[in-house]
Length: 170
Image (tube, rainbow, N blue to C red; front, side, top):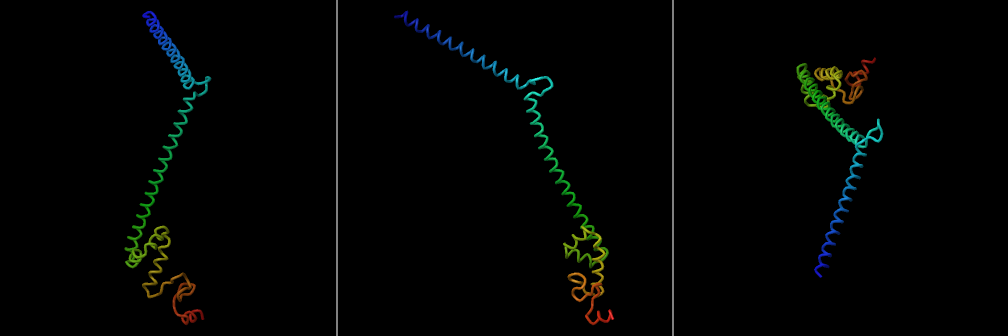
């Protein structure tokens, strides 16, 4: 009976040893398979071709480069926009200051009508027309509200009553 127990224990040790040896063989086979797959991924299939790792690296680098370029463009456009806005505000301030120096009434109008100031800042050639309107106001003439011919003025912009206009034409 002791001999049978010893044989059973010895059989279990042998079985455990065989399982360990089989497990080690399986591990070595998997290690070899993994090494081959890594080598295949890292090395080029043929000379002059790019390995799969090289292709992946190029794709990742291109993606990062595109992201960097997009961010730089956005920052440059924002900076340009900010500069343009600041430049426009400076032009508007210069216009308002020069208008105030030329005519206090023009300065008052520019301060009271910001849309007129903006329009003149965008189109400085409109300043003489505004000066002409101010001179008409200063000489007692009426300003046309909706362009030439409206509010009692003829097509030349002259103001007056209907009788005055008939006399001038006749």
